[in-house]
Length: 159
Image (tube, rainbow, N blue to C red; front, side, top):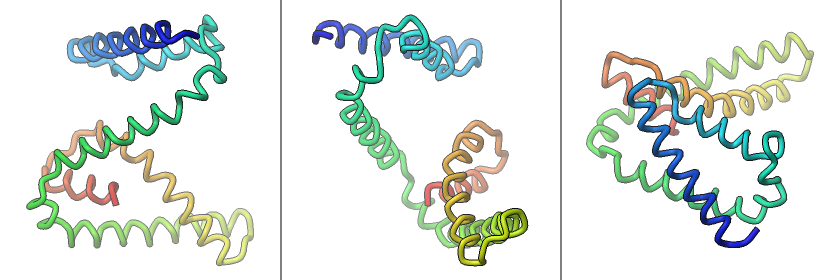
């Protein structure tokens, strides 16, 4: 692929992203869904315009910039006074959720697989640590009435 084709593809995908966001505002159909469908159509299982080998050289740069954008956006939108005010209660909630989740998931692993206590505790910690990444999606799109409760839960997930 030459440089012009790559830049044109990135530009068209960005324009498609903006258009799908505008469509999301009117219809409440998630814009990410349209981008996933576009990626499927462009990829090797769709029309075959790209292959994983083509994107392997660009992937580290894209992930680095994505991570930078997410971190800077989070840093600029943080309210330090509410963070300090809600820190202790959020920390207690985080510890409580971690302990209870570890006991429940560890008990299930111990009952099903008959592992040792050390192995089940380690496995439970890994599983609930991975599961918290998925909780962000559900909480961000849910409707929580209390603003204080929303801040506590978001802070708990971010830690």
